[in-house]
Structures are given as structure tokens and as C-alpha cells.
Image (cartoon, rainbow, N blue to C red; front, side):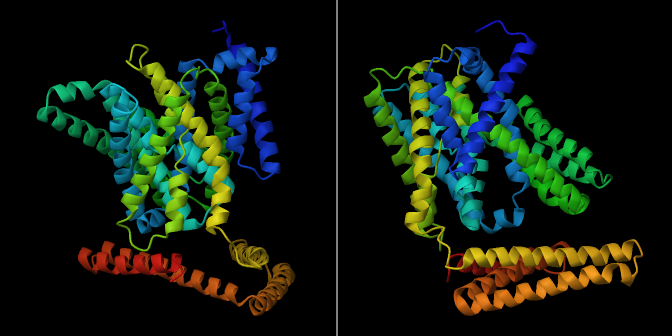
Length: 525
């Protein structure tokens, strides 16, 4: 590696940011998934000798640098941003498919790939299960980026997001156990199995406790401030602090940051954040996530080019087939117990189970003397490249072919009218609130309110005309109204339970009935 001073490192980072931003901007302009464009361009830059970029390539492809940047710098921010914006009620409503995929599916895939690695890839037991851990979970960075850029239906997006946020935490735990403790546990027999199970439970439980405690503490802290720059800083400290504290006590940093961000985004936002603060925190993390994602995928492209695949094509092909088959069995089997889950969604979740930067960062963290490290490195990099490019590029056509995201005729026009009407309603409410707070007279506010009310009336008339032209749109609006009423009912039951008006058994029955109605609405029944 070149001798680099801080000034030189800053120059290289700035070049990397400029490249990432430029490629992302072009991809977004042409409405293509920017992560795939970044990986491809990064790979091309890595393969072509461009003198001015050689120091950058050498710096980035240093294993320790890549591992630190992906896991310590970017992963907490990306996980925190996604979890912060995820409504807890939506997670609860979709808990069954999320748990089935994130835990049942991940463990099933881990077992299948592990034994296939021993029998078909001729790996040692630790190497086989290390490879299985790397390949058994979907990478949250890759999944969230690809699916955000192509767009998926809300409930499907929640399931995909929930799986990707939790199963990578499970995969990291399985990776560490497989890499460093598996042989020891096997030698101890039944006692070793008990130690392994205890380690697994301890790492996940500690992550949940640390994330929950810190998330609750920072949520309470926001009540004492109405200062969005300061509260943004609180969120940064929370995301990185929960991750690093959990890792320092050998707990799951990934699970800690996800839980902490969920608590802050739901409980903290409710008790201690003004609308202005929520908006600004969301905007800040939107920018941070876009920058982090862009850099991550460009770095993945550069990193992939360092592997030598000569004479390994048969092994690579076999590894890709094993991973795809294991993912299919895991998805379809784990979701077979979930009622009213559309088959088309299962196909999307199966093919959209992308691997990415987390897998590469983890494999690079293996000790240099780990048996089979080079073979695992080659196979992991190859599967990640196949996953991001081939699977990533085909997700959007798959969505169209399955009709998952098909919109009714006139729906775009309807969405535009709804958005404009909502803006006008919000403007009128804000004017009335300001009028009351600042003691403004009728003469000051009357003209603007009348203008907005007339525009709102015109908008409603246009919607009525659209309903006459496309009756199915009215049905959609009625379904949306029904959903909102069901969410309100769910919250009402929660309030009754908290105030001890009803028992937990009755609350659970009522909430399950509400959830079943929501599921039927989502599936069009």
C-alpha cells in the first residue's frame, strides 16, 4: 500500500465521492438502479489501468480499509436510517412473514449451504459454514437500495425491509461462531452444542437489550429539546454508540442499532420531536444514506476486481447454484406456513435475496491463516457480483412480469391530485394554527384561506370526475380509508390494554382479528 498522509487520504476520499455522486446522478437520470451501475463502473475502473486512479484503487482494496469503512462507518448509518423510518405498527402487522424469513429462512439456508459446502465444494466444516453464514442472509445495504430504486408495494417492501434488517444480524452471529468456535463446540459434543446455543442467545439478547435501553434513553432526552440540529446529533450518537457499545461487549451491534433506531423513530418521534425536527432528521439521513450507499457499491465494484478466478469457473457456477437453491427452499418453505401470502410476492422475495457489501466485508475480516480463506473469498465475491448484477438488473422486469407493481389506468393522475389536495389541506390547517398562535386577524388570513379552499374544491371536483372515468380508483380510496380505520382500531386496543381496561388475552384476540382484515385488504380479498 502507498505511504499516505492525511492530506492524500482526503484527496482520495474526495475523488471517490465525486465518482460515486457522478455515477449515481447519471443512473437516477436514466431511472436505473444506481447500486448496480456503481458496481459495474467500479469493476471496470478496477480492471482498467487508469494511472490517476491507481492510488485510490490500492487504498480502497486494502482489506482492512474496506472492512472498517463498510462495517464500522457505513453499516450503522444505513441500518439506523432504514429502521428509524420504519413504523413499528407495520412491523407488528407483518411480524409472521418477517420472523419466518429473518430467522427460520436464514437458519434453513445456513444449514443447506453448510452441508452442500462440505459435500459438493469439498470445504472443511468451519469453511463450509463460514461460507454458509456469508450467503444465508440478504445484505440490507444491497436489498434496501435496489428495492427503493425500483419501488415495490408497501406491505411487500415492509416484509423485505424487515427481513433484511434482522437477518444480517443473525448471519453475523453465525459467521463468528462458525469461524472461531465451531470446531471447539463440536469437540465438546452435547456440551458444545449447549455452549453454542447459549452464545447465540446471549449475543442476540444483549443486542436487543442495549439497543432498546439506549433507544429509550435518547427518546426521553429528545423531550427536553426542540432543536433539530442537536437532535440530529443525538441520532448520530445513538446509531453509532449502540453499534460500538454492543460490539465492545461481544453482542450483536447490528441488532442493537436496528432496535435503537426503531425505538427512536417510533417512541422518540412521538413523545419528543416536532414536525420540523422529524422532517429535518429524515432529510439528513436521506442524504447520508444516499452518500453511504453510493460509496459502498463503488467500493464493492473496485474490491471485486482483486480476485483471481482462473480455473475456478466450475466451482463458482456450483456455488451460485447452491446459494440460489438454498434461498429458494428457505423462502418457500418458511413462508408456506403464512396464510394469505401471495405467491408472486414469494417469487420476488426469493429472487430479490441479494448479497452485497456485508458479505465481502465479513470474508475480508477472516484471519489470513484461516483454512480455505482464499477459496471462500473467490466464491463469496463471485456470488455477490452475480447477485448484484444479474439478480439486481432482473428484479424490475420480474416485478413487471408478475404484475406486482402494476398500477391501474389513471392512477398516476389520481396520485397527483391526492398529493396536491393534501398539500392544500395542510396549508389551511397551518394558517389557522398560526392565526391562533400569533393572534392574526381575519383580514390577514381570509384571502389566502379562501384561495386555498377554492383550489381544494376544484381539486375534489377533478377527483370526482376521475372516479367516474375510472371507477376502480374509488374502490382503491375506499380500501385506503378502511386500512386507516383498522390502524386506528389497532391503536385504540393498545390504549385500552395500557390503561388496563381490557386483558392481554382480549387485546391479542382483537388485534389478531384486525391484522387478518388488513392482510385480506392487502391481498385484494
